[in-house]
Image 1 (cartoon, rainbow, N blue to C red):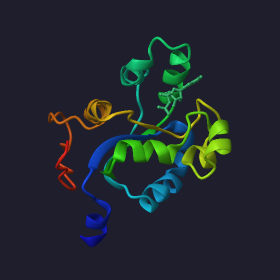
Image 2 (spheres, rainbow, N blue to C red):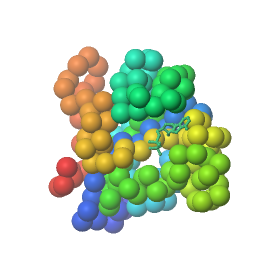
Image 3 (cartoon, rainbow, N blue to C red):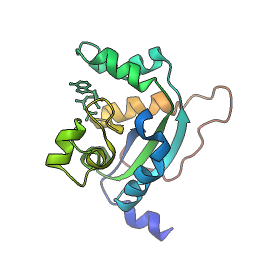
Length: 163
Ligand code: IDP
């Protein structure tokens, strides 16, 4: 439709957005901000990660001192995973989120999602893929293309020409 067409420009990308356990009960507010941006939600799933699934998802941070805290928090309750699509979706979503530390976000990017809804650097509302290759891996993590048990991932909302 026209709404979707207007939002999908020439540099459209897909990225993985995760709403973390601290704000799942306020996910409507976060999704409102997504819809106010240039991005659209093309897949969504609520799930609760096990400790080892969260450790797998955050494997790039496994040598960091905060790894255990991060994994513990990410597996502490339901999360909402979404595929977002739009112009430069990877950087657009990270800019909407703001700096990882919610207190820093309130100073540096007061309109950002973390500034508005975050608590600190752990309870910081969301995650966004860092690059197109990370997005591909993380989208496959939450929305595997292979058909397993249950309904397959056939939500091919809109085709993307670049990835
Ligand atoms: P990002 O989420 O904006 O990509 P990264 O620096 O890649 O930020 O860190 C990934 C996640 O690890 C953050 O969202 C945050 O939850 C957590 N994290 C980052 N730095 C710290 C820290 O110093 N202490 C505790 N957790 C941290």
